[in-house]
Image 1: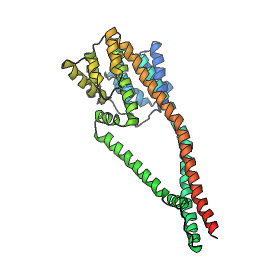
Image 2 (image 1 turned 135 degrees about the horizontal axis):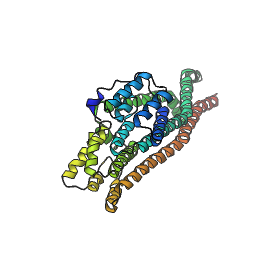
Image 3 (image 1 turned 60 degrees about the vertical axis):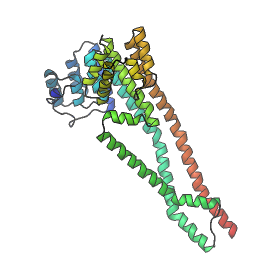
Image 4 (image 1 turned 90 degrees about the horizontal axis):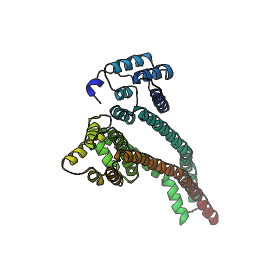
Length: 355
């Protein structure tokens, strides 16, 4: 996006920010209005002022920004949309498929909100159970174990065998849990520092080395690249010109860096499928699809299709993980409760036998 023009746009984020659901619904309405003959300026101002009840200052600011020649992507960033949507809008301003881009972006945000709510609902009960178990263990360590120890000294009893192991486990379990919590916080801090101090390309390169994140990172990057590249090629652009569009955009610097690398490889005489074949940030079979698309002359169609395949892969993997969370969590909590129960009952049983 043009950084010189963006300097003229007042910042409206502090006044109001739409929720993800409102952002998604607004994009879908905006796409519908464009399809029904509204101009971009009319649709955007009507939507913000009359339907979303945005502050009047926003409407004046957006009107001024559009009249001054600022891009729609700049305006969307100003009113609080994320980089994913802003970058898609930037590409749509180049390839002209604005209505579909806005509609797809709206449904993407609604799906994102739905998955977030589903994840919160999935984790809610396991989280409460884990907290409850931790409280029970702390109460046992604070009240019951000291009493057992005192009673054992009175009866000259010492736990042995499995009972000794379980008592030891109960005694140190809170410490173990706090160590894991401390390590988790350290990991979060490390991730935050990496995100703040490294480039998007470095962050993606690190992500693909982590087994769980690698699948999502590769499929998301491949989805975005194939989708926008397909739309650009559909307008008649060459691959090199399309990559230049990627390099000029500023919302997603990762793709600007990737486009620069691809162009250098093309200049050195490599074909596009050859460049993609061993590229670490993309899915393994992406280059096969690109090679097939170049051979049959319908690369843009196959790119658009492959972008939906990447999304479907991520959705299927997410659903699979969601289905595993409950049984694994409840199984772990149940096993922990059994160990706590045995840790109390076995010493009591051995103690009774000594009387």
